[in-house]
Amino acid sequence: TVLALAACGGGKIGETPGGTPQANNKKLALLPGVKGEPFYISMECGAKEEAGKLGYELSVQAPEKFEAALQVPIVNSVLAAKPSGVLIAPTDDTALGTPMKQLTSAGIKVVEVDTKLKDRTVATSAISSNNKQGGQLAAQTLAKLIGEKGSVLVINTKAGTSTTDARAAGFEEEIKKYPNIKYVGQKYSDNEPSQAANIVSAQIAATPDLAGVFATNLNSGEGAAAGLRNANKRGEVKLVGFDASPKQVDGLRNGDVQALIAQDPAGIGRQGVQQVVNALDGKPTTKEIETNLVAITKDDMDSKKEYFYRTSC
Ligand code: T6T
Image (cartoon, rainbow, N blue to C red; front, top):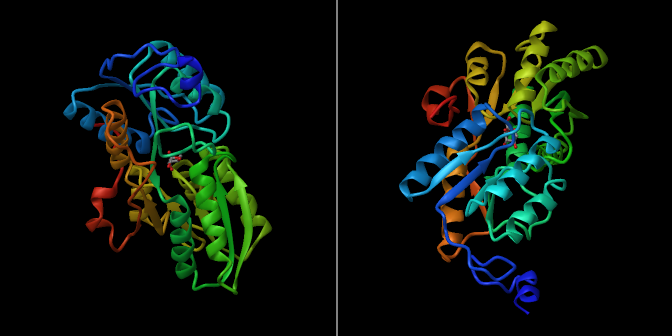
């Protein structure tokens, strides 16, 4: 039957599992990981611009916190609204699997932007930084800053976040190549800056020779900077962050942080829209697309302004 064929992936483009062809209503939804955060705002700017060029309307719905339990109901309400395509940053690499599959079963084209599911069969395409490479770059940058010796800590966000997990893994792999650097492990901040600050203070007390910290994203980096400041270790313990929010960029300028690994969120949004529209038009799509990453320090920050994130479009 048509139903059985479609359930095995045999349905035609734009056809629901029931076999009813779904008209392209030119509506797209972007579901970022969290609301009001410069990384996702920049992504939204890129996506909106591209959607406008291609004649699509793009709505944005984000949870108040980076949390699967808050994002799942959003996916369900988007399913009911039935846009033709969805761009989603799943906040958990497993928990969002079932709701995302419901989107594709309803004939909605799904593209992952930034984070992704472990299950690589659900989304048509995924656009993200090479996060493992970003973690390796962070390790090389931090190693250089600390003269390749001393103890280093990773402040991560939440286990199950594909991007930050990959950054921490890349960092760990790379930092182990330095014989005089001791990796003291990673601690999770739950993506809360205050928790990241507390972790840094506690680690300084426990590890007096702490030489460096790698914070795997915006919130953990902003929090780690506050922790170092509170402990009077600003500049003495070197900090490498990920992302380039206005606060992080200020931190680079004033010495709170020594290097940032910046992503291209607007490019992720732009290419996400291109991929979902290609899928809707029956054109070829690319399964995995990598966007740019760049290390920024105080010395070269003025020539890298195009990598700074935005707070409005
Ligand atoms: O680092 C980005 C993003 O890549 C990550 O998946 C989650 O955190 C950010 O949004 C920054 O807060």
